[in-house]
Image (tube, rainbow, N blue to C red; front, side, top):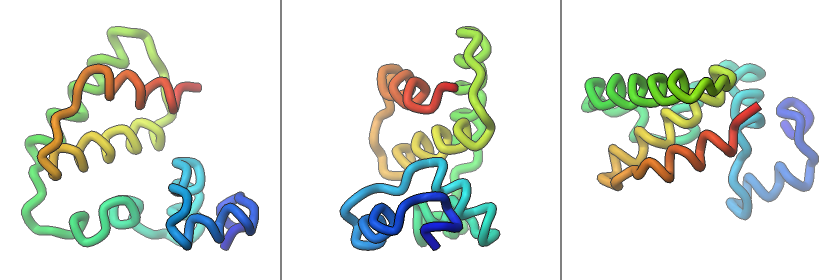
Amino acid sequence: MAEAIGVSHRAYHSYEKGQRGLPVEALVALGDSFEIDIAWVLLGTKAIRAGHDFEALKRIETELDQHLTSEGIKIKSEKRGAIVARWYQSHVEGREVSDDDVHTWIELVRE
């Protein structure tokens, strides 16, 4: 598994034990290698609920895309997806997302 997602065996072991979070690149590799739903990996059973707030998801994607365009920032689509997933998860959990949060997430994934 570690080789399939491009991480060391030691790193993978720490992910399994919950000692470290899985990096975005490893999540993308996991999805590509094993054709799994990354949203399910990130959100667990919350990802398969019938009650998704699609309007909020569209609003989040629109706001992110507008910000990226206005700032002239280009990021890979999988990294954009990771930001949207994190933002949406915060929404689902009722946590307010500040502009600073979004800027931090963007800086973490910039090319």
